[in-house]
Image (cartoon, rainbow, N blue to C red; front, side):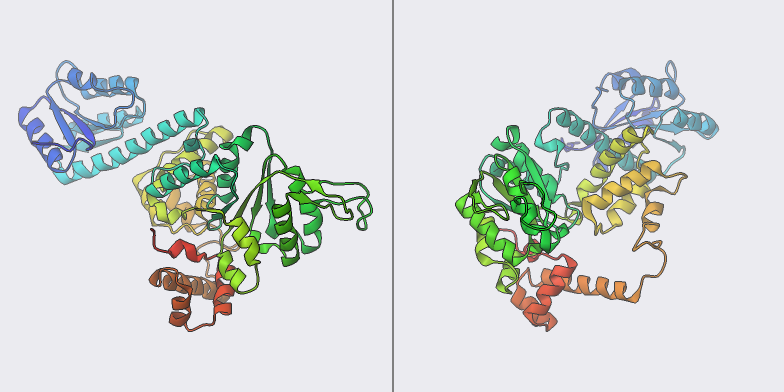
Length: 460
């Protein structure tokens, strides 16, 4: 029988010929690269430290029983999934084997579909373990894979685009929902570019600066420029000269400051507040937004000339729900990180945990997932990930408590606009017609809900 070369290998050890042949054939029909062995040693010889499959062994065998096979296998790789096949009288022995590190046991006689289901779960766990090992090896080298973690096509494309742009000095506009990691992407542009070795990375959240302080914060001030200004202070633009300035939530920047920022970018000089002296600056600007700046500019709430100055190149960060295959891997990675930080043993993911992670919609994206991983490490009891998700706080209340009517209306409104954007493929005019609302109203609602139409545009 021809086997898919990319199929998960399964080594099945049983000294009974009929059992060995029938189980091996069934597993091959189920899509596994299954091999049968009469004795354990030839199978054990195939177990390299990163063997990408699963070992299944009978318990009662002459010369070397299943417990000895388990011990030998785990000596080669402590994370290898080993499944024991037991007779009715061996259940207590199999339970003891699980305490010693076996993945699971199956009691004879068994349904073939049940064996396949157990092996599939074990194979998924093995895939996560090996992907995490690869990530940690690459993390030791400090490569881009150690920063932007994931194996999905969406995150792989982001890594490729980022590396291409990092080598340039072009301004970059980053689009992404809250919690997707816009600052991390900006820092990677700095770290993996020529400025990373010699200049500072300066991050500013424009939404956190009061309008009255924005000019001083960005451009600096001279003594006496305003009440309380007792000494000269360099602003963020001046401080980032030679490096990278990251302006997060740039849509929050006051229009008056946008004018001054545009001039500074064009002239490559700034004036401190209270001074007429031109101070040269050499910086790379990276900006981030969770909404469409072009729509804001058409509505008069963001300067179009600044938008085009910023938007020399774009990076779009996919929301977590758009790369679901990365969710278990990221969660496992964060769990290991927090377990080491808090001095605890990592809690392995069970099949029900993976189901709960994949069923959740992740409105807070990677930031929410990382927070959940830490709570999972610190949690007491056996509620698992599903229990933590059910209890996650919403506005300070338990997730099981009824939400305020206004919150429910907001959630419904956001989903309705998202569905319209999906249906219209990001075309704002079509969305206005579909929802029967004017452009200004739609723009305001999209801004309030953090919706960016570019996420819904067809991929070229």
